[in-house]
Length: 106
Image 1: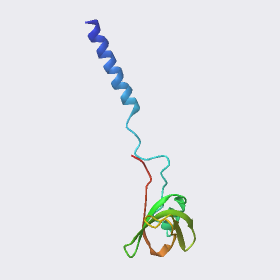
Image 2: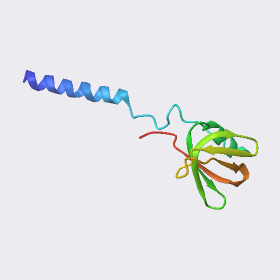
Image 3: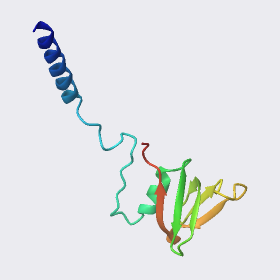
Image 4: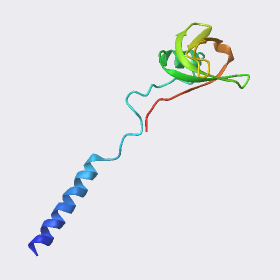
């Protein structure tokens, strides 16, 4: 009887402890917030990813993936292009349809 009560108390304590821990947060602390109403949203998004790998979807439908080196007022420079590591690309910001970037892990 005493052993059954001890197990019940341990189980309750475990459940209460798990309840206080709560679910994992849905948003990472490192995740950047992007103002999508801004007129220069692509520029600010690319500036946040300088030094990181992104995939840029062009208005023509072509994808260019590489590391963001510099972002200017009219263009972005990508280095270490996937499949063409010895090449760099300079892309006009007006030609950027989407920026795809990894912002969180599993």
